[in-house]
Length: 277
Image (cartoon, rainbow, N blue to C red; front, top):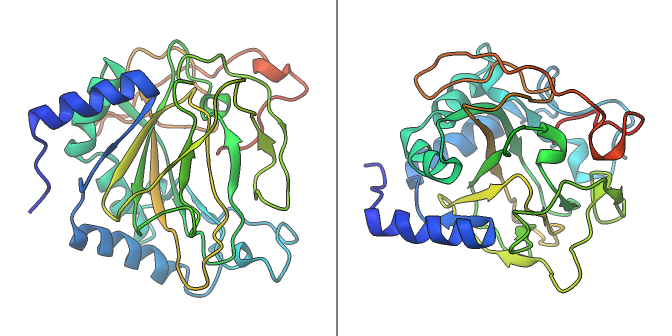
């Protein structure tokens, strides 16, 4: 049976989201649902990267890098020809997510991106960043729904967020430390703030605002994966969206059009974001 959202819980989570820019819905998805997601993606990746969905180019990872076999998968919901496609789309449009997203966005949510992270033992983390630097939703911002498929903590590469950065401007990132991060961008926390770990159990969902500075720790465990299925949403009233995020979809399955974001963003035209995160 699906988890039931109690109204007081929704109010408390919304208050935390409004205050800190992120909040966790505990146990939103059931163990059988989590196992179905995890097993379907692991089966697809059993022989390594999958052309057309895995974010992998020859030479992008050294052979000894754990991500050489398990790079993240981009937009799985857009691949109906693969077993993960209908599965990702089903969870992307799950009404339990809609309940929270409509409240956080104060608008109807549009699903615009899906991603799957494997994060095997030994994998690097992801340096601190802001999601709306990449999605470029205007007006307003995006919201992420980060579904934990394993228990996730500081040892196996769990998440960290910087509280009260949801009202920050989107800034041009610095260069990340490639020894600790598999992505290139780093946004330092403002003076007087610092990231805090957000420990999750499988089935929990971490929601965060697109301006919130967040990232993940390296996976220093010997045996523990830290798998996650992640969705991004824009408000129905959005007037711009980066061109990587095609076919915005309502929760009743309608595909809408959002004009492509214009201008160069916070880094100017030369450093316009060139890849989805």
